[in-house]
Length: 230
Image 1 (cartoon, rainbow, N blue to C red):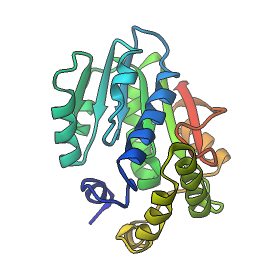
Image 2: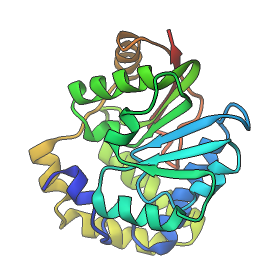
Image 3: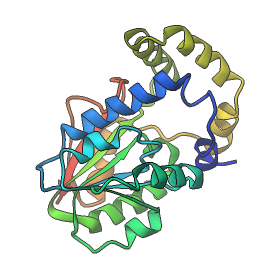
């Protein structure tokens, strides 16, 4: 099993219940929507997951492309958004084949931690090609190296308390200890970055980056970076 396979199956480790899943994606969609540069923008959400609130983002832009590698998640996205005139679902290969300079904003949220440094570099090179010269690359949920698991657990409990699923969150934390998540973490690892390291990595990829004041999503111990092609 790899990370894509892990996230391709519905189980109670990723989301503690349906309420958690829906509020999670609604929070992310609202944060992304706030970053859309104009109603005419062409937006790409790369590694979007289930994206159950993607219509909120589509309302704020001309067109939204959802990119997902996990086969079952991809198929569910295609079914969910087939009637939506402003949303297209693509595979990573389809997205990479789009014309250069055709996208106004690309979002990569809560994906970088599952990539090696070299994999992230290759992905950013693709994004650099796809973005318009005036475009924005939004890199969200970057995990710092200090106490990442502790802060993730605390953030989930606070999120659960604020949204009506606190005790489900407690149970979810127990389940994750018994799941394949930690086995995968040991075998495949997670990538962590300091703010300085990620700024340097983005500059090396040809971007002019800055750290955003607010991280996309509920965990404000993690970081979001906004970058334009340099």
